[in-house]
Image 1 (cartoon, rainbow, N blue to C red):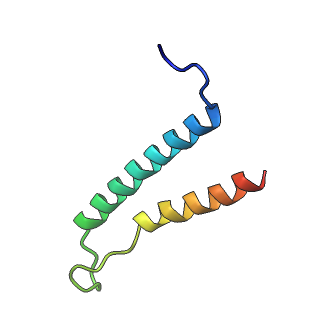
Image 2 (image 1 turned 90 degrees about the vertical axis):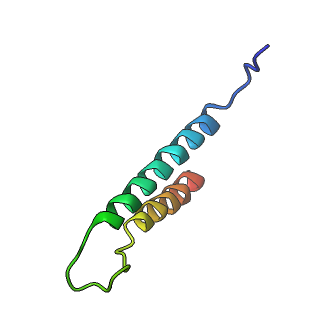
Length: 65
């Protein structure tokens, strides 16, 4: 029998984490395919780090409210 006592906030948190992880992976892949003149070979812009920053800011504001 399924447990009917689930927390919608926890479900939202897990879904958001999954979406942000997928976004970070996609940005990392795109960043790896970009060739930007002037950057050393293998150097990246750090686009996936934007997702991490958004997650930290979002958690900061959610925990305050």
